[in-house]
Length: 137
Length: 137
DNA sequence: CTCCAAATGCAAATAAGTTGCATTTGGTAT
DNA sequence: ATACCAAATGCAACTTATTTGCATTTGGAG
Image (cartoon, each protein chain N blue to C red):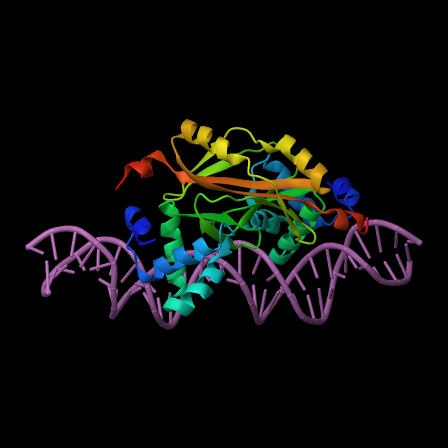
C-alpha cells in the first residue's frame, strides 16, 4: 500500500494506508465515504474531512474508483477490480445486479478517440420491478 | 401535457404542467431540480418541495428520466429523448460528450431477463484529460 | 355539486460533502 | 542525522441538495 501511494505521487500517511487497506478488504464491493470513515476512524482517529479529501486525491491518481448513487451519496472501491452494475426500481428502491460490465473494451476506444486516460465509470439502470408494476394501476 | 399526466395516473396540476413544458423546451438537455424550480416558480409560484416531489412522481411513472451527477445533485429530462453521455476529467472537472448511447438495445435484453419495465439509465465515464495528464508528474 | 385522496405550501430538519485556518508530518535536501 | 517545507491533517463552521411533518387546497371521479 505504501509503495502504491508513493508511486502515485502521494504521501504514505497512516490514515491513507488504513483507507487503502479497508478498501482492499472489500474485494471490489464499493463502500461509502461514511463507512470508510467509520472503519478507519476507530484505528487511526482520522477526521471525516480527511477521508473526503484523501478519496479525491486517490481518485485523481487513479487508485480508487468512485460511483455516484441516487441518494446523493457516492461509494468507492479500489481501481481496476472486477465489478458489476445495478438495476434499481424507482418505486421501491430495490436493486438487482446485472451480469457483467460492458465497458472494458468500450473504454479503450473512448480513451483513444478523446485522449483521456480512462479511470472508470458510473452506470446505473432504472426501471420498475415486476412486483411494483403489478401493484395498483 | 395534461393528457400525458392523466394517462400516467397523475393529476394535471398547474404546477406539473408548467414543469413538463419547461422540460420539453430543453429538447433533451437535462436540467437540475433547482433550475426547474427557478423557471416554474416565476410562472406558478410553485414551492421547491413540490418540484422535488413532482419529479419523483414523474420519474416513477416513466415521464421523466433522472441522471445523478458527481456534485451530489441530479438532473432531469423528458423520458425517451435522444441523449448522450459525458466523459469527465477527475482533475479539472471538464466534461466531453461521447457520441451515441450504447443502451437502447441493451435495455431491452436486460428488461427481458429481469422482468423490469426499463425506464432509463445513468452513465458517466471518468478519466484524466490530455491537458491535466500533461501537467506536473 | 360534493367529496376525498392527491397534491401543495410553508417551515424546519437532515445528510453529504466542503472550506478556512492553524497545526502536524512525510520525505527530500543538506 | 537534522532541518525544512509542501503536503496532509484536525477541527469547527458552513453550504447545498433534498426531505419531512403538517395544515390547507384542489383536481376530477361519481
